[in-house]
Image 1: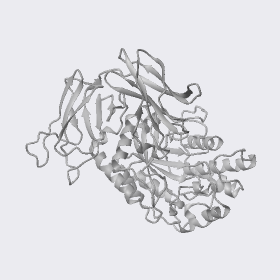
Image 2: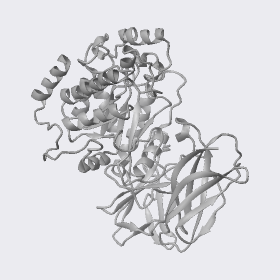
Image 3: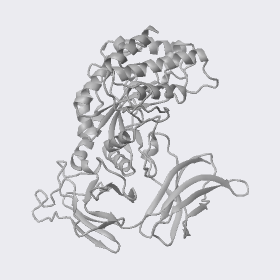
Image 4: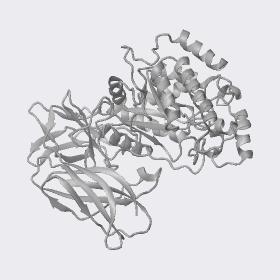
Amino acid sequence: MKMKSIILFLLLFCIPFFHFGQTSDGTKHDFLNLNKPERLEWFRDLGFGMFIHFSFDSQLGVVISHSMVGASDDYLDRFVNELPKTFNPNEFAPEEIANLAKLAGMKYIVFTTKHHSGFCMWETQTTDFNITNTPYRKDLLAEYVTATRNAGLAVGFYFSPEDFNFLHENGQQVRRRFPEPISQHVMKKYLELVELQCMELMAKYGNIDIIFFDGGEGPLQEKCKKVVWELQPDIVVTRGAIKTPEQTVLGISSEDPWESCITMGTQWAYKPTNEEYKTGSRLIEILIETRAKGGNLLLNVGPKPSGALPEEQEANLQEMAAWNFINQEAIEKVSPWILPNEEDIWFTWKPEEKTLYAFLTKIPDWRLGARKEFVIKSALISENSEVSVLGQSGELVEYQLSTDATTYFEQKETGLQISCVRAQRIYNNQKWHNPIVLKMTNVSPALQPPAVATRKATPSGREGNQLSLQGEVLKTGDAASLKVGFQYRQYAGFVEELYSDEWKETERLEVSGTGNFSIAPDIKKEGKEYQIRAFVDHPKLRVFGDIVRVRY
């Protein structure tokens, strides 16, 4: 109780403007989801953030925290008592990380204050299992907060209500799922621990913009949300209050704010060997898709034990920085268009300005000075419209005096015809394999797209040995008739999904209105897991439903 009194003292005298159990207007609320609508819109406009997974077990290069589950008593004792003695991230440079994040177009950073292991990266009164009891000795979290704030970025915390060290100290098996509930006596202590830690985090570092709760669904997480919303009513709770798909993006656009958290490789924390990194181009494509569907991308880095970023991660961020410097206006403060993409052309939209951005993806061999033509079927221009390539003047190509760099456009019955040149020299060897972005002003929708939903697949056939794919046409749009079908692929795995882009396609059925439809493709029953998405073909373009998984 003495510890709790100390923290309460800090709260009362350091942040007296907080209103316990009330919003600023004095209205009482429950604590299911107290994210303020205006703060969610602020968060959505941020669009792109950096996730930092860092803790003392980066010294081993193993999965962060989870190696404690199923470990022997000897391993756990050495993990908790010995490993912190050699943790000294004296090359941690939060100013450099924040500046690189800013160049890459990121507007916020979320740092792991405490992962599931229970190791705290700040100076805490709640446990000795923290950064100040290592050779580093300093409050690393405070350094992160100061540097991020000084860079003009929003400050975010990751916090795990689950605490493996607490379980270990209290004679509980280290695990995330319990067949029997934890005893009332232990749970009371557990709840008090996370309450005090959240109180500290909200009291010691000024206004915190964002917090990401990972795990502890139920009493532990609800306790944490209650504390942070009481103490900092303007904070945005992401995981725990909005959709936060992990290692994937939503299959369809969403009107509600959401955030996808993605690793550059296969692991959240530092993995010194056997790592497979995504290319900078793939990360840019993921960012584009996320923004086109109305979400935020939280892209992860995992510093080395020294605190420095691995070279591969830094290089990816620098490639994204080069692309962002050219195209940032197409990513910042944008909304989804009437559909996220037309095949490999993706869209973002600024409705107040009637400005549409088209990302021309998957053209790795577009040489400097070459002209290409595109048709955009969902956009209608006006007599005051202009079409340009972001970053380019449209006046010349270096060393190519006879090359016409002008962007030409014309509205035809088949769609908006655009002819443009890659006219800006980005790399010394004149190659640039990342998406080019078209900016179109005074644009309106050229059609009303249909909408389709992917429903749960069911067994069919006499012996239940066939898979019946189910879908539903929700809206027909402005088409008199449509064709529907499905795409499917074997599920590549939790981390590997974003590397996979090969879909197989079923036959198509013609439909004339809304309603359900089903198709049973020839898929062998082998106990495999598949991803499935329905599609509907408008006379001019294709629209997809969300992706669902089924084991068959």
